[in-house]
Length: 402
Picture 1 (cartoon, rainbow, N blue to C red):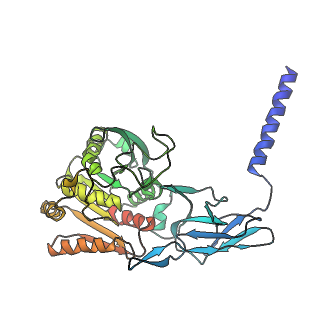
Picture 2 (tube, helix red, strand yellow; picture 1 turned 60 degrees about the horizontal axis):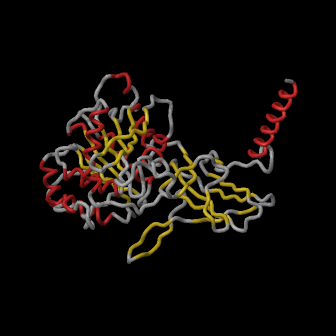
Picture 3 (cartoon, rainbow, N blue to C red; picture 1 turned 180 degrees about the horizontal axis):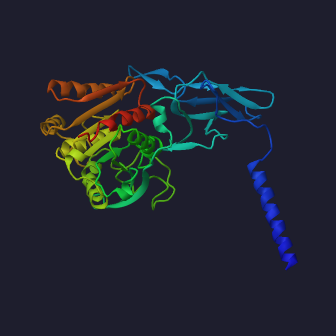
């Protein structure tokens, strides 16, 4: 017995030693990255004594301008880090505005996440390190503050139209479980290449709703975040297909199948949750492809949604190869029918340098020509999550007001 106990103790000691070796406790230089200073400047560090060149790219850097097809677009910028005698590469920014930022290191031409930062996030098939600087009213919406919190659930539903069991992300506000009340619903859609995790992770939707509701600026509501890729069961790696490589090039993209199957989502939500089941208590909004979906779902179902939000939306009619071309036919005539039903809010937001701004301006010109009332917000920057978080923060307080 003593021999067995001795062997067990030796095994545990060996495991502990191995764990310490794996974690590198006490080994090498002790540096932090990112290191946020009192003035909101940030130092990024990387321990790479053998590297020849280290750079950083991120949305905290002013974008560089590139010309393509006669137009000017924003592109990611890159700066060099400087190595010291200990093999630590560093770069310190100017003071940054409060915001949620994403970034990558580039080591000898290879893009990586910051190995000293445990906080990272996936967007399609890219991983980014994440940095949150609070300190103003907007950026503090993205933080987990000491307020009552809603619940974020991953929920499977049957979509007979798609012929699949599919997944939703559903936010229920604080108190939903015990209140006994029925709530309004916002259906919130992602962009091309995204999935049902995009708004809750990249978009900070739960934090934004928690904070706006706690401040009394938004009505308590359910937020249903769909997977707009109708050929998918759920996000990559969490389906019966296993660990497939994420891609934007998916079957049945923007050819009408998702719009046609969308009533399956509404039916499931209204059967499963305590929600109000009328147009005045339903809203739909989305970014980029999700804005495209929101536009065509709403104008093909003019009695379904009282509130429509287009965030950097693709708004032009498509000419799909197969699919459901009738969904996209007669766009302007369908818009007229939607406005004849008096929606409570038609909201458009886009960045000044977004590659879709001309399309949105053309849509606005049509709305103006028909005297259709809408709300418009134009922000700095382009086709980026920073803008889409702003649009969600501005759009939701306008919903479901009595």
